[in-house]
Each structure stands twice: as C-alpha cells, then as structure tokens.
Image (cartoon, rainbow, N blue to C red; front, top):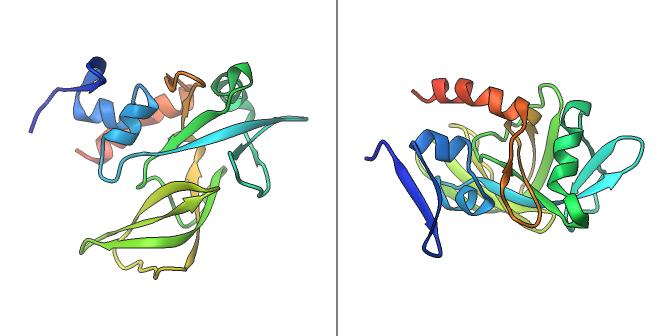
Length: 183
C-alpha cells in the first residue's frame, strides 16, 4: 500500500497525491474513471438555461435537474463554450432515500456483482454506465428499476472540453468529512 500515488495518462503525470486526495478530488475525468473500485461515475451533461440553470445527462429525456443557486456558476463553467461538461459521483454516494436536494439517478439493473457484505449494481442512466455500491441486505435482480439520489455536495463537476475538475466550495468542503468517515 502506498501513501502517495501518481496517475499518468499517455506518459504525462495527471495527478499525484494521497489515495484519499485522488479518490475524493480527482483532477480529471480520466483519474475519476481510473481510480477506485468501482471507479467514480462520470456522466456527460448538457446545460439547459432558462429561469434558473438545469442539467440533464446527455441522451436523457427525463425531467431536467434544477441546479441550486450556489452551484449554477459551477454548472455553467462545466458546460463552457457550448460543449457538454461532466458530473461525477462515487458509487457509494448514491442513496436510496432522498434527504435534501440532489441529483436523481434512476436506472435498470443490468449486472449485479455480489461481494458478500455489499453488491456492486451496474446499469445505464441516460445511456451512460453507472455503478452503485448497494449496502448490505439490499438485493436487486437484473431488470429491476432502482431510483437513487446523489446529494449535491457529493457531485463533482468537470469542464468541457478538457475534462479538468472544477472546484466547487460545497463539494470541497465536504471532502474532510468523507475522509474522516473512512479513517
């Protein structure tokens, strides 16, 4: 086990840091998709301007997801230059019960990896692969529809077209709490 890790892409150093820094604050979509088991869910989004800002997974036709006022600038920077940006969220961040506002994520179960005390549930949201670490005792058969929720403070924003992470004060403030939970 290492206390510092370097992540390289095509021979270039992309991020270096502790395992916690890399897992909870990935520098790019590449790092987010590379590190962790399962790795972070990274979903392309499009911005839907209107009275406020809303986002929607690219390819999704469901109701737009309203972005809270405090995150609208971050959402706008993610989708700069008319490109679609990305949101990322950990597979363990998905919750079955919505507490407060967040991103609703519903998908049909395609694959279930039973791992004893937990299961990795895989499906597609808006045509994009997503994974969920289901808590002990929660079993979902293939074909089952799961309706989940990601709190806004656990959503990571990545800029288009570079894929670089955009810092958001809410998400960054939440990192020390998450790290304390896993120590």
